[in-house]
Image (spheres, rainbow, N blue to C red):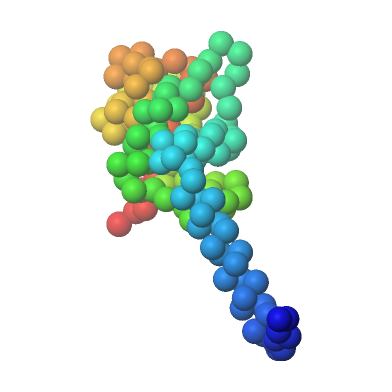
Length: 136
């Protein structure tokens, strides 16, 4: 037996919105936590600056992903634009300039950038990541 249900436009839009939210939640649930945080690192690397020939990122993807995880950084969104806004709110990339003093980099910078020796030899054009804390 078939039933005909009449819905107003607002009722129909609520039903559609609920279905879309459920689908998005199930897709997010299917991502493993590690792959989710690695995806945030990928999104951060799309921001400028980028390393030039001979230079490198001073952080490993996995190490930075673990930092995101420890911090509890989570963006409940699917598109890269939204993820980029969340990630770049706290983390920034910086290209080391010639003449940057060693004192410019603090211990947090050294901890995040495990692939470079910032304490004794910051290399020109290498890219570091730092936490962008708001001024208090």
